[in-house]
Amino acid sequence: MARRKREIKKRKKTQEQLLQPGGSVFEKEDTVAEPAGQVIASFHDAPGEPEFDDSTAVAPSSPPLAEKVGGKARREEPPPAKRVPDSSWLGRNKENLLLGMLVLYVFLLGLGTVGELFEIEWILNLPLFR
Image 1 (cartoon, rainbow, N blue to C red):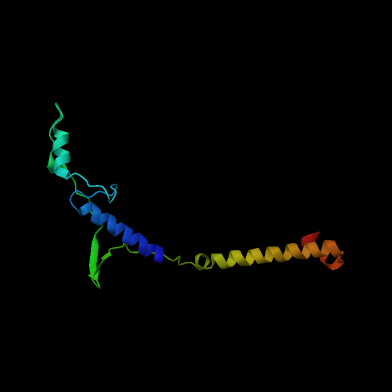
Image 2 (cartoon, rainbow, N blue to C red):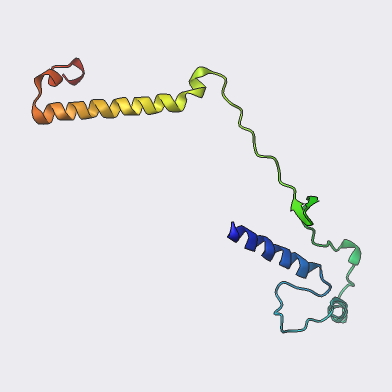
């Protein structure tokens, strides 16, 4: 739970840095970044380069927020996938049947092993072990 809260705080801090003008996730706090306008201007000073068109730039977007609860924005999560229950009796009880078959197999295996090790005739004379 604490790890989840730390991840949320870290993600929120990263989003805040991206939304600030001139902010970058990759910058260290003790360095001063150039304003975005100066960087673009120096880029356009190169000869033979086309100008940058701001109309095609896409701003980073955050996931949709459903509502504010207690002053905090809550993320909208998709509804959990609904599992359609099988309507047949076999489909509903498949796990129990497989477990019963496994228990029966282990019991018969143990019975045969005991019959062989201790040479118990009535076990060895069963039609299953002939």
